[in-house]
Image (cartoon, rainbow over all chains, first blue to last red; front, side, top):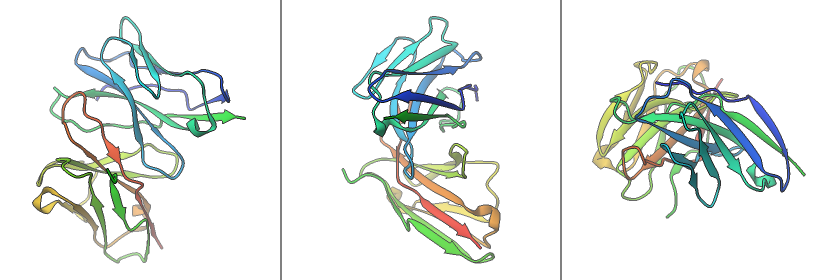
Length: 112
Length: 115
């Protein structure tokens, strides 16, 4: 499985934008970039995913570098409820194994 | 949509005992995954089902672990002869459409403590 690298932790202030980086220099052409987050005492929840183009949904935006070797999850206005561990995952459904492989993620702290 | 339901939420057992967890996926979701998570780590894949067929098992999964999904609905995960190292959060997830756009929906997990 292609690997991702994320900072262990980040801090943000409430109502400010947050940019969570992810490096994936060994990404292949068929890897999709998925983001999940895990709030305290809960299972992970889907946030967003993309292949090449930037993506937006009600939760966040995903900015993908032109060479696809990195991506950034953008929370436009952080709230206290956004405090969670954010996981960046590469998913290659052509590789024969369709499971999601989680790393340690980035723990986001949101200060009031 | 009631979400993925896992029972029990917490389980305390003594070393050597057998335990069984249950997962009820979202209705009509044909994929079901089991993960395990220890403190400070991301979830670790254990196994997954497509309907009632178990398609993949982690090489890290010992023979003491077995999972079933009879009739392609709910699933059970059994751990025999539990060890202290089995203490973890066991997470279940389900999805509707496999493929690159697949979205997994996770339950809140079963926290296992082996004394």
